[in-house]
Amino acid sequence: MESPKFLYLQTFGCQMNVSDSEKIASLLAGVGYQLTEESTAADLIILNTCTVRAKAEEKVYRQLENLRPLKRKKPSLLFGVGGCVAQQEGERLLEKVPYLDLVFGTHNLHRIPQIVLAAEEGRRLSETDFIDNETRLGLFPSDDQPGGVTRFVTVMQGCDNYCSYCIVPYVRGREISRRSADIIAEISQMAANGVKEITLLGQNVNSYGLNDPDQPDFAGLLRMVSDIVGIERIRFTTSHPKDITRPLIDCFAQLPKLCGHIHLPAQAGSSAVLARMNRGYTRQDYLDKVAALRAARPDIAITSDIIVGFPGESEADFAETLSLVEETRYTDIFSFIYSKRPGTAAAEFDGDLPYDLKLERLDRLAEVQKKITREFNKAQVGSVQKVLVERASRRPGQIFGRSSYNQIVNFDGDISLVGSLADVEIIEGYQNSLLGRLVTGH
Ligand code: 5AD
Ligand code: SF4
Image (tube, rainbow, N blue to C red; front, side, top):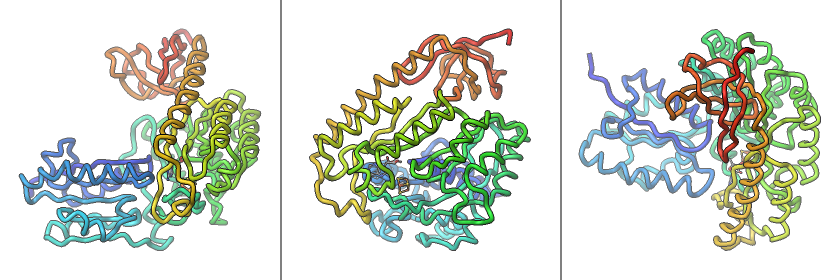
């Protein structure tokens, strides 16, 4: 028997890349590669990359440089780059990085075994062509190793929204929805294997099914998933505010399995900036959606993505972002400094702001949100919450799970509770997590 070959796989960016990496690992297992945590043991190193901001892209080049000495020590070691930087740069990557052996794009995961086998024979390939929808449908990342407590399930891929700052539509391609029958079959299998929580995943899950008359809409899909016996919790990400529909809002009122949390990126609080971002909603539209969600599920936790320093963002525009954050009272936000991405509409916009000003705004925003998060976390103290126990915490004797609001809760408890929905009284609210106490006798 051939000796095993080792794959060191590093994933950057979003959950979609994490899911693609699982697929890459299982495809390469088919041609003899075992995953290793040690880059020094590797025969093949693959970076699954992100290009949503310039910094994320630079990280990839830096990491390749960092790993380069390994190749000097072991000349047969192969380097590959996949994901969104690969999609954006294609062939050019092989020119830019002379010690790189292979490149594959976001639509070419299925070709990875052949590309790697070619590289083993000394051929340097770059495959980044987008593929037709029929082929794409057959290639949706599906679960190879069902198990665990909580799993992600990809329901759609790609994005047709063309927000003016965003490179995703160019590197992930057009929106495509997976067949609901395939999704339900996969989740049913997971449920049979003991999975309790499902997060439905897509760049823009709310447009699920809209391009395909044979599929339900997203609210319909949620109802189908909710009917699966054994699945106790449902989450989804990411939502576009313009596509939050009445039927979807009703799901929050009517589906007890649907968790009390939604990630609803606002990006900005000023209608003028939102228009230039091509977001398709105004500040008021956004606030109306938030109000409708809260009417359906009064305790719903809302999180957001916010970009500061978009071209032409005035102090008054930024003040509107701060006030939107105050008004919505997010449980948390991800905030980003605007980063110019090649090929996007906003890359041509005037009004670039000095970096120091962008940084200052980022800090001011973080300050405002930190306070709200802390207040929210403190307000949880004394409440009893259902926590889905996922694993042992870092601290010995403690276990870790999430509340319905997606907050991290640590509490003293036995590892045998993993997979159960425990009643936990919150006894401390910190900045990034909660401390609880198992409630017995329920
Ligand atoms: N600059 C900064 N942030 C960006 N995002 C997307 N594109 C950019 C960009 N060019 C942010 C958005 C999005 C999140 C995933 O990344 O807030 O919701
Ligand atoms: Fe990018 Fe906008 Fe699509 Fe989200 S909805 S992936 S921000 S283009």
